[in-house]
Length: 210
Image (cartoon, rainbow, N blue to C red; front, top):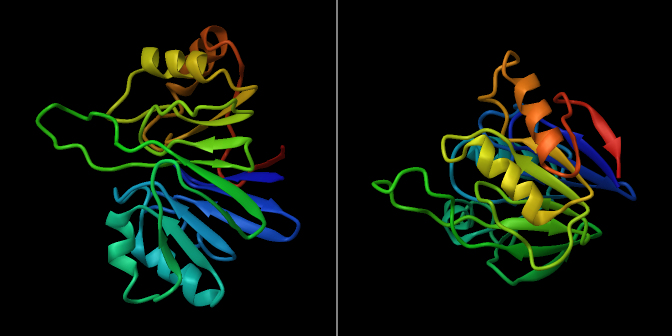
């Protein structure tokens, strides 16, 4: 399986000529959903869900489908009947040659005065876990963790403890558009030294084989 990092929270997974895209949001490239056979969306926040990018992807490939939670599905179901699927914690499905498990229910707390929305994470092929905007720990081992490294709802001690709790073989940064180049070495050093796993980051557009 080939992993390609897109800007911020978006990733592309490719296997056997099929492509799965997760969270093509407003901080990601305009074409981030193009070429996708299937798209997974973790929640409704605009840095993870951009309706224009999703529409472009589905219009370019009439066979492409979306799997997401209810709040996002309701925005797209009318325009793409039969191609938008609602899933939640505990669900499993197969799409574009990938096996997917859904974990988690709520977005992390941003502030007690801000109501929490729903958020789901996706474990792909029992190996790659994208948690969206939450520090969800799947109920089974994770080989590759997509690590939300910097957000309004987290701090570095929580990120480090999350890596320790999940215990992946390796972790790649996502949710990093707000992290400046000046601060990146600090995060790299501290997460790498204290997380207890192989911690790396990919420049948007870069790929690695898993």
